[in-house]
Length: 535
Image (cartoon, rainbow, N blue to C red; front, top):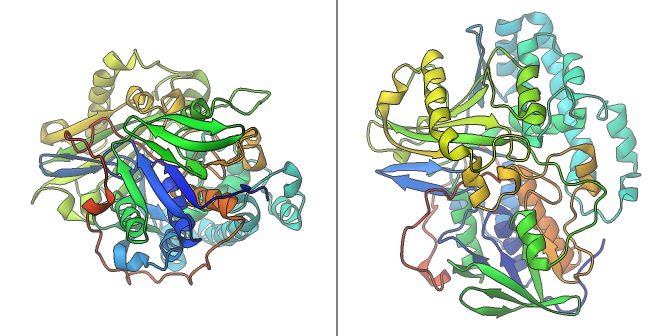
């Protein structure tokens, strides 16, 4: 594994999102002195927070999967996730609602899910679900150590027994077809394949290997932190500060000073920070601009679809909603063509509706509710550009509310007391390439050793982390990216992995970031309303 040579005593981490905080904790655990620089006034990055009128809106991810990976980041400094956060397992993980009026509660416990599948689709698909679950587990085991949790220096690293094992499992076939070998009901196939959208691909074009995302959602378990997902980066930042990290909030990085191929200092709009190494977590265009170079690729990077998100604080809710509800439109294949090829807004939208106050009522005033409505949309490379969204945004908001009312959320428009609409134009203002928070798509040529690497030729002591680099998009993989970045700097040192956590054992102390850890914080709004994102 290629590692940073020379001194690495003091590392500056640019960005206090989940990737940067993960890197900071693993670096601290390996004995490095760490300074974290963040342009916003609080940690979180894409996992941010908007507060309006007593409503607390998570701006990015809405759940935590693979909590053991999160626990490892705390364990890196001898800390405990359970002492910092209370994670509540969600049962069901989510509810799927279909255009024909049917619903399916998706459980991660096998017996409960088998009973639900039999009720929904019959005994044959219930048996198929059992086989599908075993396949997902085997697929995860084949990929995790060799293809996900690893630093690639060459595609030749793929030539290992696990590659043959992945091929034998059908990982290089098409996702939709492989899922169809286990369950025949078309609605069930959607439940176990829609996750490919996170990777920027339709199920008919995605490799079956991407079913590992469905494993995380439908097998490993889905959790929600008390205090919202934004409580996670706050807890990580607290742990890092307690372990000795220094945080500089409200500082925008403007330049990287270098001598030859080494970065010698990180310069912000307020100060100069000498360093021995640097971890860069901004989106790739920002990172490459700071480095003054980018890797040579035969083809331009292709980005994932974007999303419109309506954060709504309401004076009522609707009994048909679970914590997470996926409302599928009747169209399916056409939806993916619109999102990834033609660049049209969905004519028959499939929507994610999240009601976090189902699990944590404290996120809204008494008797009120928070609803998060995510509508996938084309990114600005192939769909409406940022200027077009200025007029399109309000019209699309009205279309969404009309469609939600038609799907059973009657009176939703009139129920809204506080809201924030986020469109691709907002993502673009946050320096997300192609106006998408989901970064570079996971096409075959942009996955594993073919994804933009976390080291850059021509710079000896800069390492990348975040969803644009290895291993990719999503909370679990972004946490891993921070660990992999730290390993590049400390020479492969990896803190011991703790045993798997047991559900319902966590305690809640997601306290505020200590003031002593913050330097140079400007006055003003705590969090810009447009500061939104998804890791």
